[in-house]
Image 1 (tube, rainbow, N blue to C red):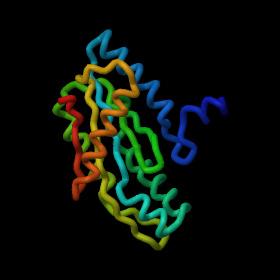
Image 2 (cartoon, one colour; image 1 turned 30 degrees about the vertical axis):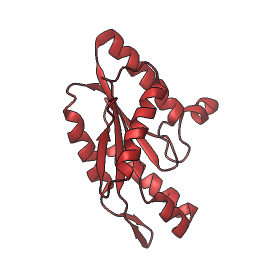
Image 3 (spheres, rainbow, N blue to C red; image 1 turned 45 degrees about the vertical axis):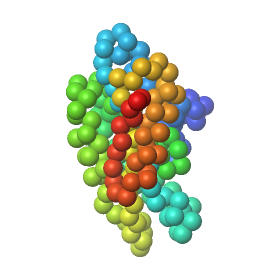
Length: 171
């Protein structure tokens, strides 16, 4: 049980880690193939994390990550699974996506949760979030391909000045 926890869960936030989420993505790929259920993999990058970490220290930057995780947990339900897959990168797997157009509304809700400043002791910290999305309409069969597509979209979004999201397009 302890080993399973170490392998599949982020020790700081208690969320799934990349290994745990990759298993969930693999299950979503299989469900799409057998039942046609659409899904989306959403990556969220807390843009100013490295500045906060270097300016205020490791302990405070960890608190920022924990607070961001708590906010993302507020927007989850049985179809939405949050994870922490990198130092300052979160992910949400949206299973059983009924309408691909609903993705914009959910991403905007997630951005709204992360937008207010974080109160960490006597310090108030603000950050923006870059979001990259890979939809199950992509012709991929491996979780890593979806992670790479969402990461590519997130990297594009990081270079935009405001909170924004980019949906990966194979073209």
